[in-house]
Image (cartoon, rainbow, N blue to C red):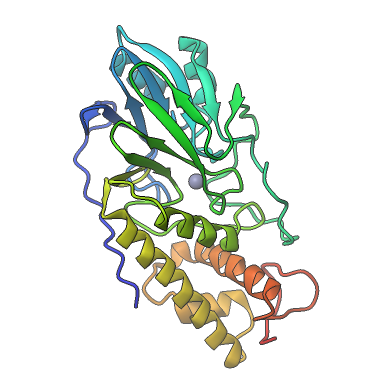
Amino acid sequence: MANIPFNKDLTFEYGVVDQVSPMIRRVIARNPSAFTLHGTGTYIVGTGQVAVIDPGPDDPEHIQAILDAVKGETVSHIIITHTHRDHSPGAAPLKAETGAHVWGCGPHGHGRISKATDGGTSDEGADTDYMPDTLVNDADILDTKGWSFQAVHTPGHTSNHTCFHLREENVLFSGDHVMGWSTTIVSPPDGDMYRYMQSLEKLLLRSDAHYWPTHGPRIDQPKAYVGELLKHRQEREEQIAQCLRQDIGAIPDMVKAMYTDVPEHLHSAAARSVLSHLVHMVETKRAACDGAPGADSIFRTA
Ligand SMILES: [Zn+2]
């Protein structure tokens, strides 16, 4: 079985900024949940002229905490990894206060339209109001006097998900693509398991020293970590294939059979991930169902 070294340990105080590396500060929003752990970790990079990565929810208390943290400094850029409501809505009020330029992923649902017709949504919720000043494509570079970023497009969690490499410290801000404390939710139609797994493989080709995820502590030895995440997904697909061989064809029944170690209030999120695997398995002829795969479909071996 995959052995992912999840870590939930984070020492922090809401509203108080932490210097987590020579160039990086972090302040955590007060939006704890089953999906965000303690809350959204907003990163501030640089000194004097700074970038703010994922200002989080549109929460006046959190925006004020960011502004307090950068008092006397200039926020020149706001960088956005993806358009879930715990990441991007803070961009608009922070831009209004600072005049910063929003350099980030595209608007929500900017990537390919999934074949899944199922209308379910992620539990995190989508921010459809977000619009960047500059839409960042894979490998784009933002270079300033004090720091520079390169974008790494990593679709899967959402179609627009983008990680950002801080070149001066050789670290990757991994957003929700790779989280420190839990696996990532991949919820169709905007979430796409096949692309998510491709995006994990893309990270295996890199040599980042650490990841800074939005939720959870710093990830050390990121390649080994990502390798375990991939293994975990491959094992899930094998479990699903096993369910199909045993004629367990409804997603809620598969979740009950497979997620014995996951509390029941997270089963609806687990069901979204199973659907996402099945969409991919139907596409690659390893599973079948009548019509387009959806949450209520009955699946069988192909
Ligand atoms: Zn997210």
